[in-house]
Image (cartoon, rainbow, N blue to C red; front, side):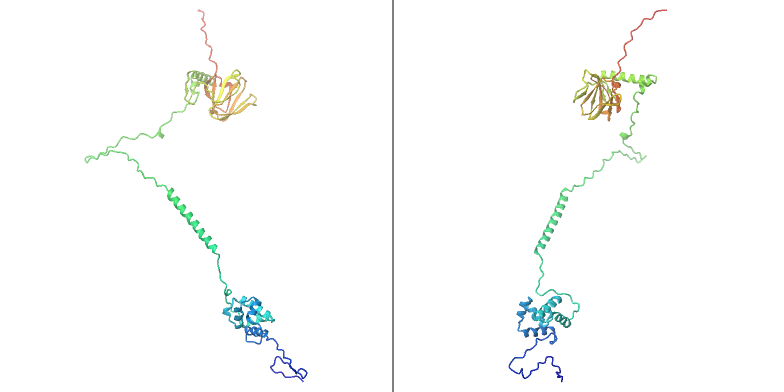
Length: 351
């Protein structure tokens, strides 16, 4: 028939065959027997004959934490995740169900959303080098600011002194009878208000003097230029001395004196000179430095091609005659016309 054991959880029946002096085996306490998880772990530890120091050495957990878990002194324990890990390791060492021990701990100490606490005994330390680097940076910035302020103070220029304009001296004489005022002499008109000389077209006077013939005007102009060259007259339009002798200031290119046509082109400033033939092909092109000259040969139809005509002076038979006035100038036009031969008087017969 069944045996009524009542509330006895563990029943060990002893028969007549077992009635001897053999000690009765006692089972390890379970996690549900004690009032809380701390007492249950303590009972299991004592059952195995271990001390708290033995548990600390085996689990690498501080002995004070082991004792705090057994006494459920949560204020002496680190944050909740660390404590749960300690409980799991403690139960695993005693051969108990680690997850059941964690569940019992969570049931005994429910989480109320408290903030995590750092492990007890852990001290937060900062790297002392960071403070030194920060202090050094502040010193460098302060030195730069002071240097800029000092440079501004040194290089700051004083504002110019305010000089009052000279007052125009006027003599004012007030008479009580008629209140007459005497002023000084009037100032002269400014330079900008002067009227320039009227412009005269070159060759216009010669054309008018020769009855409006352009060819006759050009011939008269060339004859006058030749006479001025002999006399050394200064041309008012170009402001250079007509008739000045040629002075060698550099190298002379082109033909030799025996092969030359008498026309010599000298560069006042550096410039390019191109000599073309009558068919347009290039006879010579060179870059003349200041003082260099080119002697034109007797080849007919040569044309001088330049970019800046005013940079080149024209000499004929060693005397300055003019300057180039156009970009392309035939060499033949630079040769002054020969003076007309004198006409001998012829005696006419009397009627």
